[in-house]
Image 1: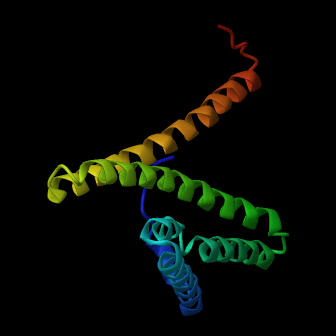
Image 2: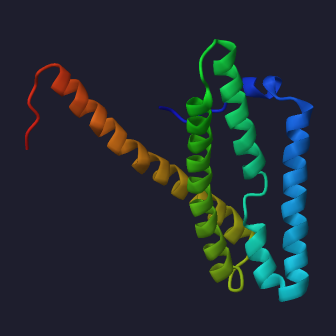
Length: 158
């Protein structure tokens, strides 16, 4: 599988879906602000790290996939959950990269120029997220190779 961008999905989105994402994101931001007022910016900042639009996105992805299957007369519940799970896995990979980004900025920004630290941390975030994705793909590829060889009657040994 190759990493890519598919803009055709933008045409399938409805304004209501963007509204729901906007409302979820806004609500999370308000909660983070209230927490920051009560407990300080360090604690409030942790709440800003919450992927604000993820709950709305996962719900909409599940609903859309389920509807697509049901239009063809099939039960789409499982497919909807699987699509939302794939989205959650991608969000997790990006979040781990974002954590590395935050740690780098936290450690380096007091001692170095922000114009160097921020782009460098961004590159590290991207590299970490892609590496995690690659590592996640490898076991699947190995299983497929083993299954393919087994179906051909080939014995796989050490």
